[in-house]
Amino acid sequence: MRTPSDFLFKSRPSRSLARHLSLMRREILGGAVALAALAATPVSATAEMLRVEKDELKFGFIKLTDMAPLAVAKELGYFEDEGLYVTLEAQANWKVLLDRVITGELDGAHMLAGQPLAATIGFGTKAHIITPFSMDLNGNGITVSNEVWEMMKPHIPKLADGGPQHPISAAALKPVISAFKDQGKPFKMGMVFPVSTHNYELRYWLAAGGINPGFYAPADVSGTIMADALLSVTPPPQMPATLEAGTINGYCVGEPWNQAAVFKKIGVPVITDYQIWKNNPEKVFGITAEFAEKYPNTALALTKALIRAAIWLDENDNANRPEAVKLLSRPNYVGADEEVIANSMTGTFEFEQGDKRDIPDFNVFFRHFATYPYYSDAIWYLTQMRRWGQIAEAKPDSWYVDTAKSVYRPDIYLKVAKMLVAEGHAKEADFPWATDGFREPTPAADIIDGIPYDGRQPNAYLASLKIGLKGDQRVEGGTVLGQLKQ
Image 1 (cartoon, rainbow, N blue to C red):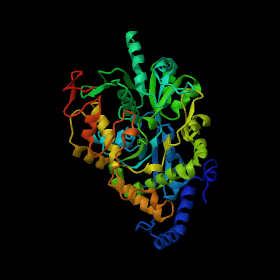
Image 2 (cartoon, helix red, strand yellow):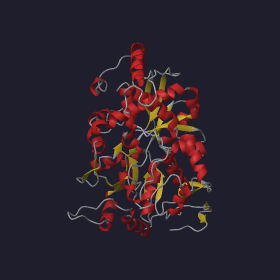
Image 3 (cartoon, rainbow, N blue to C red):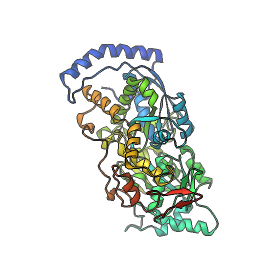
Image 4 (cartoon, rainbow, N blue to C red):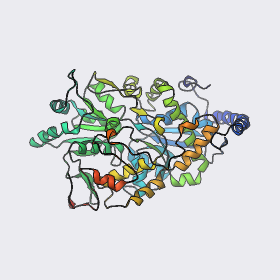
């Protein structure tokens, strides 16, 4: 039985030797695996040793804890099991990462879920990117400076012990923004990229509290039209330093950069995305459609390895998370202190210093069918692009569904899942075989503004949101044409 210590911290053979050993192992074990699979075919599938078309691959990532499936797949040998020799390379920012996937300098990457969708519809860079694998659920937080936190506290309901009642509404931030405005100062917040989950989650939280985060328009892509709070891009690892310098007053980012603010005593996380929208989709693994067409077996093989890594990260009630924390703390991966990473990766989250609360599903890599690329997840991102003007014109419901299906590829995912079950690496119950690609509607109780989400009805969902574009509304000349409901 493979254990983490067999792989994580031991020197590895050279690539040529590793390839030779792996090929020998595959030749020896291939027949046995196939025979075993034929003897028990739980989902009408047989195990198969994929003959990959491209075996040397370079994948990109940003230094965040949710890149973990990539690190685990490499360090535990799951990529090699599939005949893949993978180099993982940290990227400077999300734009560079996407551009390098499009040009082929990277074969694939840990991506913001909005990136493949935005690229495919031509918002920003135009390219057809697909995803056969969703990397995780939840994992982000919103942090404000110590100054802003002290100004918010009088407006936050308190528990019997005097601590703040969670989840904290952005309504507590509204008087702070007004105070900044009275002093002639803009209120500025950072997010990681215009089509990031972080941008949309931050906007969702602000709007739920009655704060307009601003609109985009074809002639003005700043996203600050009519904004009460000015949102701008800051790379994730730079968030704490930018906050400490006073350049921004708060930010939305993934871990470990919210917990880093707590440890540095420069800011306070006020809410997690799990509290904004329970079990919301986060990152994806993106490859070009051209790559998937040219190297179909390679696409299957890399997806197999990533699913196995996700299973390992969540199995036995997160028993492997301490080992994952050690791995991620290495400088070539996330490079933050183990204690900082463990603060969220092991089922807890610290808000104000000393206020550590249990959030066991803060990071989810496999539970709740986290890795399945649901169309409804893609459609939520598209609705937020439309809500804030990144999609300038109204679209019918059918457009949202068709776009989601062109980017999210559950057909690849389920083909791989059948192989994993047949090979004994996964259980049949681990995968949503009967789904039509849509999650069940998210109930009102699981979303901070109390508005349910049904991916099958994107325009009805948009119409239900108090702040944001809906129907035929559009932004022109710095204003919204048509009545803007607030």
